[in-house]
Length: 350
Image (cartoon, rainbow, N blue to C red; front, side):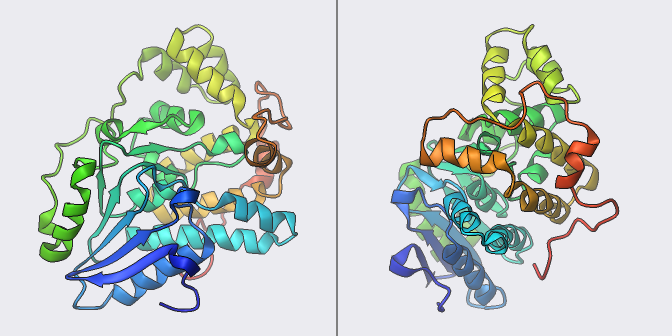
């Protein structure tokens, strides 16, 4: 491909029949997206964009446990630890630009999702035009648990859902099964895991018509998300959500437990990002707003503490900078948000 392509086959890029094929091949790392992998995918998409021999793009992954567990957040943290803040921001920016390029791509992009898709992996899977999920697929946005926010356009994906349901998924990091993702309208095609290799071959041979029949229109509903949870997550801030959860049953207790483990600052910023995504509507605006937040959040103590607790010491006991019931003022959140009137666009070319 080029000097930007990753070494040792972490990314397999080739032409096959009518398709451009991209396979994430980093299974021991759950196919986390390195900077080189991001660059390699972007370059392949650019090469195939106007190529008349390529009718569609097919993206899959090796391993089965994970389609892609996200961007390589440990690498981002490593850059920050070395003082390379702009390099860390550049890694995230490359990821967001790839999400936007996928969503705007002029040819069909089929993602074959077998295993977990989280964070940046969820963005890679669901911004494609034709996401296909096996029964082993699952989706989650666990970022608040490490002092980050759901990003890679997650706030845009959630903006089509009722606000309390979107808040529940984003704040708790609830894992969504393939069935749940279909019910929410995130995926429109389902297939057995064992049939994925044959489908990939058929797509390369026959094009987009090889896809299975599309699922019926979704109801934007999540099984188990009952009135108590809906009423709680309609609250205007996390402190009030927690207060309302105290009066509910077991599902409310599980949700409260998840919130109490997460960074209070990240939770508050996530609610703000969800509200902005509903107001502005476009994926580009959502990505721009997410980028503005994470550019500042990555140098906050909560992010380094979240990485320490989850990935370094692995004690799962982060000491956040605020209490779970803290009510953040507009002045406290303002340093993490774009200035009033600033364009909510990704810097540089998409």
